[in-house]
Image (tube, rainbow, N blue to C red):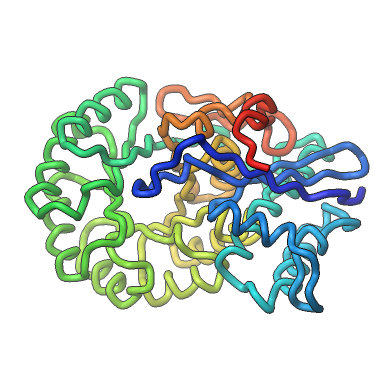
Length: 373
């Protein structure tokens, strides 16, 4: 089997509000084609136009080539070697950031091909399943008001979710009293049996974060996510050591070396690799092993379409500690409809599909509608 093409499909809603931290308004899908008619799909979480250029760029010299040029003619089963070939072939302008993002989507697509060719789920090809059902938390962008957040929480708990997270928006940007009242209200709405997580979005300093973590702990918040800027590793270390709450971070990172620093220097409790940014399933497995060796939890970040959700489910089920994934509840048509057969959700859990590869297919009519040439 040989790779014949690597397609980068840029999908975008007609109007985008760039002031919102909402990655479901556009996306970059990767489709890897082979000479045996087996295609794989993946997804990239980046600036789509930038990542598309990384894939489509013609070669410049020995260590500065576009990823498509490096892969055409290769055997998709040699996924580890191809990961290294892409990394080294883009060394001059890569090593992290958009190059790793673009590699991530391609790597997911390669594992989709491997599973389809074998007639088995990608998770089995990655090493096997610890579970077939995974708890999924409803991931929501924080609306403008606490009353709106309370209504959303009531709705999604009513739909069967056993965990819910609010992030960004006014959280951390209004006042201490606003954040405390938000958490108090949400806990009163969802009750004591459901998990509540808060994504602050990088806006606190370490002393304020320590004070707020103490307040949140009173209301049983399960984790506080990315309260500090991603490069404040010493702050994360201080916060993790001072707080009884789980501290979660990692979605901004690319490559295992960055996660090694985050674990070793930042001391976080919950690692959140985004498979569309961190290096795909191949690098994600290495990150999971690093976390497992340190007895840390891994909960993949997945605020995109059903492609990334499916890849994250396969990823989580291959880990002994992979018992929770993110499930975006954005109403964007990209998040809701790009995948024709999204993973089924029931009573708080997503069920891993039985089909080969990722077990999902694109809705080509939706792709065509939102495709940007």
